[in-house]
Amino acid sequence: MIKYTNTQVVFEEIPDEITLAINISNCQNRCVGCHSPELRANIGTELTEDELEKLIAANDGVTCVCFMGEGNDKVALWNLITYIKENHPNIKIGLYSGREDVPEDFYWDNLNYIKIGPYISELGPLNKETTNQRLYMGGKFYSGATVVNGVLRKSWTDITSNFWKR
Image (cartoon, rainbow, N blue to C red; front, side, top):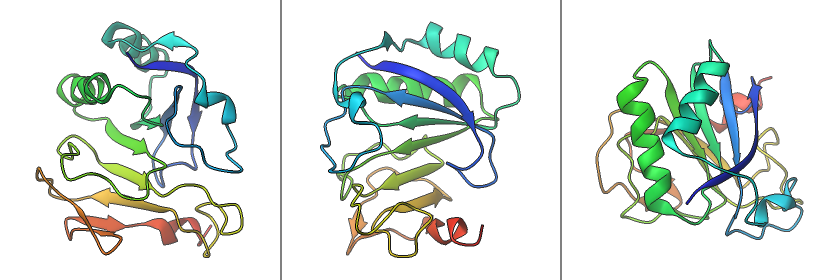
């Protein structure tokens, strides 16, 4: 089961998108200096397909839905991502993960954006050139993509520098 605590329409999380950011609770990462440590708790409202549909309908005009975290139920998360892709083909999908890498069995096909890397305060967030975090935009998707030497395979483009130009 995936739970969320709140949502917000944002313009800075995914460049050039009007994004419905959904804060997912029960975060498994324990980043020191996390800006949302309350998301470590298993709190909030269950995020079902019906609930997701209500959120999208209430935020007409969004061009992207971004899950801010993964929670602890990979199957439920990927079912929700697949639901968006199948029922809202014009809405892009993003995932913010605090993982250092993403596993080989990660389901890439339905994502347009993925952010990886834990928050490390001395390195700063995405808008600092010193950041360890990276935001990737997907091109042609394929299953079984991996992180090789800290970089996603060539079908993904590192767009982190877009945050530095603002």
